[in-house]
Length: 216
Image (cartoon, rainbow, N blue to C red; front, top):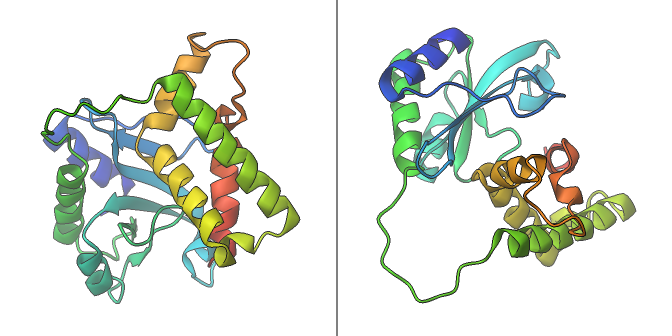
């Protein structure tokens, strides 16, 4: 299955077209649920070396979410790699060059769609975090991680607290909240005095990518 076929399958079965939120990465397309805005797939064009290949030739890959047991069983097969730029315990990268079995790719897309779909939740009395509160919290995490990486790029590997911050920011970025907050900022919906470097066009993406690359 190639990129066009994967996009066609998603469009036909789920009626979802890719969104391209990053100006610096115009070939990175995100597929999201309409209801909860969570990603269930992202197709990227990256260098083969990012996947551990010897060639630095660009390759189209698709990240999908699936069970970690499934991930373990697939990583030994042709066309499957530890998730690039995402949580490797819950996501997997698939080469869209025909090396992975087409039916397996379709099955994984379906699994990811189900795994990220809106869940029926019980009512809770817990007060919900506002958008401004969330951005302020993520800004603090972003500042903490930026300073740590600037001082020692390997520190996230060793420090449990920094690892927790990294995972929080990764979840924020992957689950659609970052993009929703970015769009709110673009529409002038946020207070002018709110610090929001975390919402810069490529700031968080580049930071998470740098950390992920160091861990390879």
